[in-house]
Image 1 (cartoon, rainbow, N blue to C red):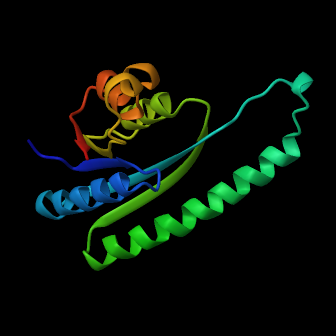
Image 2: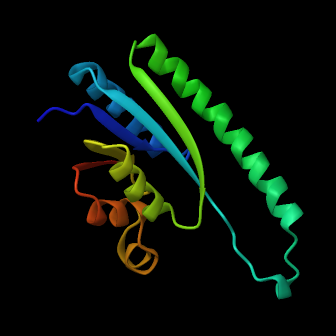
Image 3: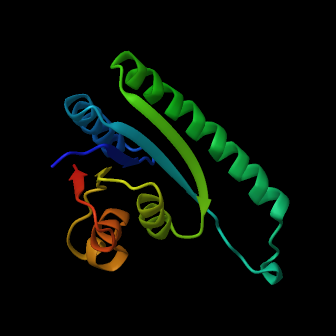
Length: 145
């Protein structure tokens, strides 16, 4: 199977960095393009709870700047490896839905993503992005621990 478009959902965690490195190795092997997507989740609150949109805009701006800083480091690594690299930061209400939709619209062949490694009751109670994505996409998903 040939992987021409590899998607790496990136949340800044050590598992996501490890997933990026695995994806980079695969991209070099298959001469693939890596697309890194970072999803920033909107904390939606109703106005009657004292919600101030200016605060959320400030927080979102800070999160975008922090994400850009992290992504630029990964971009340099990809450039040194002579791998095709693209990145996007997406503001969303549902990380799983955004990754699934992104993979469809960008014709992704493989998703390489980190797992937070939740176990037992926490995994059952909280679920996970990796689990949600792997169950809803049609392409293969490689989950890295």
